[in-house]
Image (cartoon, rainbow, N blue to C red; front, top):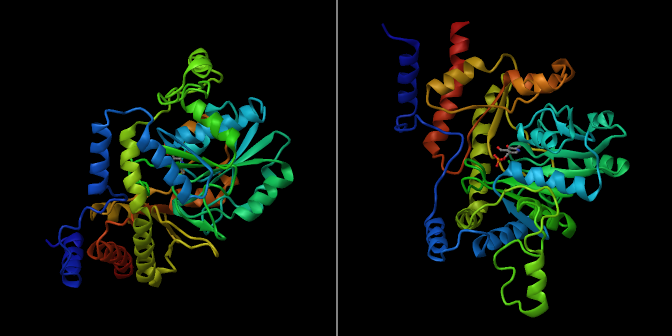
Length: 417
Ligand SMILES: Cc1ncc(COP(=O)(O)O)c(C=O)c1O
């Protein structure tokens, strides 16, 4: 007996004869360039793994690309977020239990770091079209205990920063940008990373620039930068963070470093990263503009070829005067839960991920008294939203295969109705 899946297979082969070996389409990619391999070998030949020349160059180039004065590398985006909030809390003398507003749709690390800083996350609803913090609903979440807002530039797109900054200024709140999913994207001609007080980025696997594990925190405030670097290094006196910091010193200067170099000022962490990640990261950053250009093209192609399904699918919208780096390609079904389409795509070798459900996570249900009905947009995204990849290593055949599968899913629905 001929199954439905076989018929679809025959349809795809007839329609797309070039589609061979395209049945394993991931949400992310890793393609280490010759430059990355040369850099790693150079780091190994330098016999230096602790913070050194590669990490310094990596931080400097990242700062330059994101127009920030300072950049501090750590071992993850989560660690960068952790020390960003901790630095603000120490510097501004905030109390345990003070509140930090976070979006109700984001990756769980955004709000976990609030808990790990002994502060309280307050969840605010997101926009139905861009899935990011809704400025219109923000003010209602502010209380006398609110100290900061963590905006999340989700999926590669900056938040609507102007009204958020206006609210933060009105209530004297600090802003952390969780830009772990976004690099090199402008909001009204200003780049992510310095739109708020501190920007945090991730170079984890399948992110826009990848080092395996890694995070970067950007800021224009020298005091925050010094604090964050110390916190990444066990809270150490910043007179001596790297083994180069006593190079060339003699006499009284050296004596002072010797006296202070094993002195710890803050309750810090072991969040350090090695030269190997710095070596890979430097090469990845050099390739990043081209990769993002290709991602934007891929996303544009997917959107144009799926636009006939605008009654069934909400495809990614690009905010006016804003650039999208397309770390992923989010889709929300308008008329049905995602389950059937997601399973259909996965069965045909197209990888998907949930669109960052947060407020329904078992751990948060236990910790917080969240009424999901208070978050209709996030609840809708949880039920109907997922994402697929649109990365730079997808071929034309890959893109056409994704499109053909989504089209055939809805064609089947029409044929079966
Ligand atoms: C929005 C967001 N915040 C934070 C993180 C945490 O980054 P990392 O995995 O490098 O700790 C991620 C990672 O996927 C993320 O997507």
